[in-house]
Image (tube, one colour):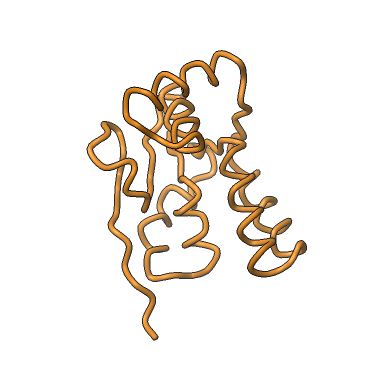
Length: 128
């Protein structure tokens, strides 16, 4: 099972140089888990940078995976992971969801460096 965090989805939708890192997990919807917080983050950024239609199309693509809702037990697990790894809320929810589904996290987010079961890729800059 795989989780692509918001940074990976956004790179993919924007066709950034970093998108190549996420093609494998994103093309296998049967093993893709999508935490609802990633839907929130991706929708918000695309809405801000483009328009609502593009944001809704992104969400439709994301919903091809298994959408994982934030439950009370998952929220508690995320809180513990946040304290343990000094993670922001969304990142801790993504990590807790990954642990719940025994999934690997794919990310460009440096908050995840040195956390087990994470495939971290340093960001490549967009060519001018």
